[in-house]
Length: 185
Image 1 (cartoon, rainbow, N blue to C red):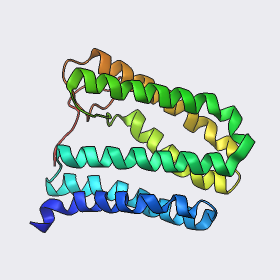
Image 2: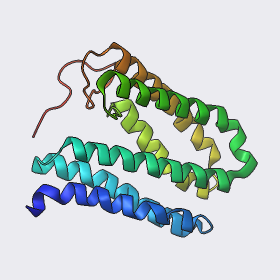
Image 3: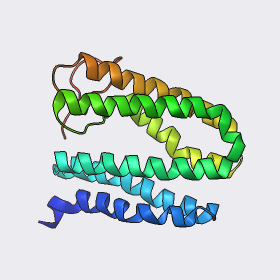
């Protein structure tokens, strides 16, 4: 019974931890530590669900919701930390948010569900965005350009996939990949 709920419990622990991130905005070390814990739970929950055969739609939705909340908390922290230095990145951030919002609306309208695709582009973007707060804390702002560009491209790829697909496959690998979307263990 415990095995069945382990992955969802890990995801829920991330959701419980997320409200503490804003409390750490003034301390980059504490913020990055909490953020690292949230990121680790994000990597572990899906892996456990796949390895134990306990992946579910509820778990996928909880994970996506936790990812969105984490993204919002990090976006605010980056904005506060960077101040006016965020301005060159702002158009990319706004465009990404707008396209991602449109994607959510399309998925809700077309498939009657909240959905974010797990494409390779989205996973790579997630990895780059995960590292972004550490780069900002270390003053490496130039590193944000690849993350910004890839975030727009992966959001656009998801938009194309949502518009052209007849059925929802959240594990769609992307436009450049052919064949089955997932090989189950």
